[in-house]
Length: 129
Length: 286
Image (tube, rainbow over all chains, first blue to last red; front, side):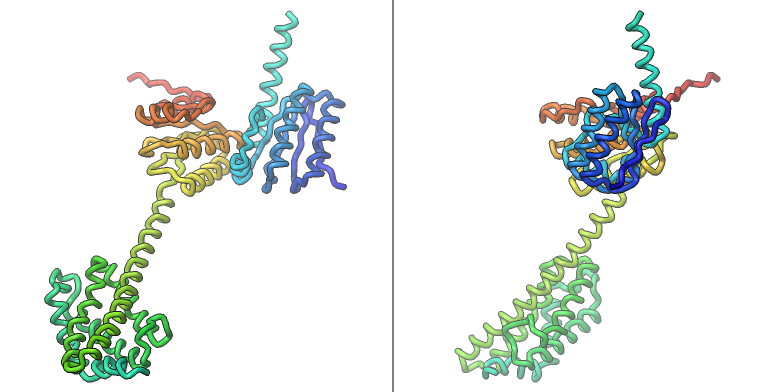
């Protein structure tokens, strides 16, 4: 069975969804991603869904859930490159993905992750002092 | 073929020229060509054509149902008349009057032919009335349909005209909304705005609702949906141009615009957008 590759870039994990997500694949991705965060001690996850053209309520909820799971594991999640049709569908389905950070493209998403990581490290330093 | 029906056919054949002249007299008396929208020659041509078409069609003996194949030519002819009347700016009653005014000349001829036979006359008159009424109804229907087509086309054109997405600055898009927002329009507006955000990679979109006359719960919901969709794509949205009355309506309706950045006018929205993108504006001293 095919899997969605999870790439590591420094302290961040990069997930690029290039195929149509079916339910089982989405669940496998969730398992793989949480395992990988734990293993690599990643501080941020970037999910690129720019090739995703069809979305249903299950996939929408899975995106929201994955982001919450990552947050519990101390990794910030950014969803990037959502297509207009997908955004409209999610809104019509009533899934507003509250709490999920979004960005227009990978570059901006990475920028967002880096700045938030820098902020967090600064905060942690302050706490220690 | 009933005997009574053939009398109308016979009359149409026998008095075609007289009928035409009387009819044109009637039309002139009712003022069909008085304001110069249609010339006398044109009116005469149309009347001649109609009488001869009518004669052709009645020859089949079917005077009850104008939906059949024998009446196809007449129906097409009346459709053509309706279309040209719409283009010439006639009212629907004037268009129907064109057909109705043939009644009097026809009834006069009927009386002349069947003067002594009261029963026959009543019957023939009834058949003729029904037939002409149906034809007039068909004309009015087709007149109205032509007008509705015009309205529909205009609506579509309006829809295309009213959704321009403009680029205000590098990374700042604006959508000045004009007119009432309904579901169909919001959908198109939303799609074109989102597509432009993807194409230009803009991080901030300003929706200006100065031109929206009223905001009700439905419109507010549409706006919120658009804002959410924009946020999902990773861009930010500012709503500007909220007039005092609209602000009051929104609060009275209990619409929750919490979490949506709103500004009173487009200038404020633009300056906020520039600030967020890291630009600053200074006045150069003379």
